[in-house]
Image 1: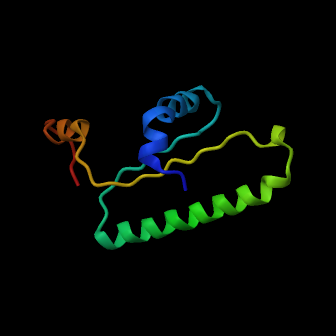
Image 2: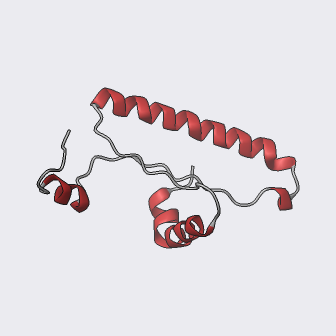
Length: 98
């Protein structure tokens, strides 16, 4: 796995997200929820399995011609955070909270 902070964040991040917005079809997914520590650990294990599968497919595709395999990036992250947008919604009259 590439070092996220040293490789992705400084230079590739803006280019990557710009390319997401220029492609047809669903290329990005944002999932928001409230998870217990047990559920977060389950999600981390699932993320690891996805990374293993991605690396296995990458290895299988090594024998294909370069023209058949464009650079592909998956960015996965999960953290506990309070967004300003969420905070604003919590203080909006009539907004349903969970």
